Amino acid sequence: MTAWIGRTLEAAEQVVVAPLRRLAATLDHDGAQWPPGMLPPLGHWLFHLPDAPHATLGADGHPAKGGFLPPIPYPRRMWAGGRLRFLEPIPIGATLVKRTTIAAITEKRGMTVLTLRHDLSVDGVAVIEEEQDLVYLPVSAPTPPKPVDRPPAERERRMLADPALLFRFSALTFNAHRIHYDLAYAQRVELYPALVVHGPLQAMLLMDQALGEGAVPTRFEFRARSPLYAGRSFTLARAGSDAWIRDDEDTITMTATLA
Image (tube, rainbow, N blue to C red):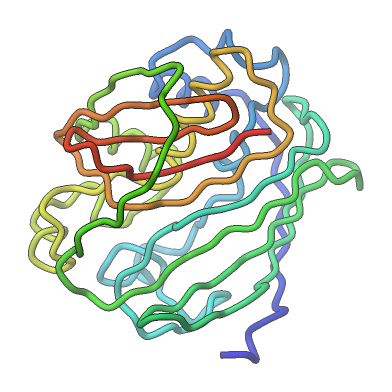
């Protein structure tokens, strides 16, 4: 797999407002809490979307491995975390150039971690630096989550992870991974008890909650800790620079840091 490290892919796309209106609707507000005329933090995830032909999708709904990404043999995959620096504001209407590099492929404890580096720019000026961790795993029943210590929450918001929320986010990000909408597949093939809430959706919810509270982050780091399942309520919590999501069984499903 080391031969894949260093491979790059570049794409350019104009930042338009329509996906942002749909994101605001999915997050249940009108977008007024976002910087006017600018792409909100993490809004770049709605652009440069995968556009593999339908016939090339794998059984899980993802584009088949072995194109740009290496053919890692484990069948289960997830967006496990990331680290971002927001360097400059991105105006609506700008042409956003994204250069993706395979930065590392690491084997650890029966799984493979693929780290991608994304460098985004406008008119040659760097605007976002991002590292994205994708985890590949064998299919097995979910293991009990490890406890995660969090400080007492200063602010909280209760939400419901219903299937409509998952469907809208899948549509926004052109994500056909079947664990987010196909209950029979999620349960019978990947052995989850219910539909799985997207990792990037959880990260966006934490970011959006912070923006609504007046935060202006220049850095954001997040890590998936345990699956969050549809049909259950969950809590967005924040204390200072720490943010996290807790499900209705008090399991921490994602942690994040804003600075």
